Image 1 (tube, rainbow, N blue to C red):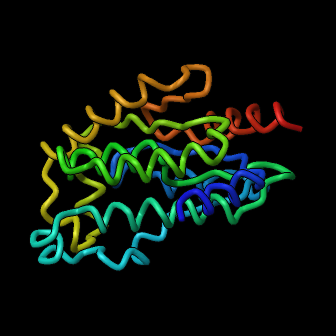
Image 2 (tube, rainbow, N blue to C red):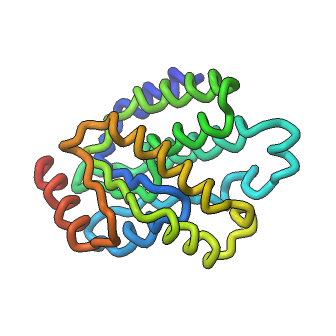
Length: 200
């Protein structure tokens, strides 16, 4: 089944920039602020049938929850033909994997296999934007947006998440990573435009 899905995706042209950041760091705000000529691929967190179902997660674990996000991101990426221009995602397959491994720990073999199969089937992103904002600021944003499933996230949770993401970003090709310490929309726009120009 996975091989058939991957084969179909391999025939698509998927040029994308992925935005990496802790939950609440402003990924969607950044993507929405970029020039309208860039296609936007936004996460649909409320479409995840396991979103906010803490009792289900406590009873059965996080595999279904994490796979739902992964498969939806794969669907969003492969259905967007960017032969003319590029798309910018307010999510990343990199952070998908980081969150899943943190949540599942030693029970992540199935997830890792599915993630590997799907990401190997499509081209790598032409660039990444890493939102490396202060943990205190991110935690304040999480609290202010008032999403019930995020109500239990602590400042320490944000610090741990930032560390895990930073470790993953360090393994990416540095030439394809723009790290932002502040919300610099103009700098992000210039970098995305430069990546786009490489494929014109």
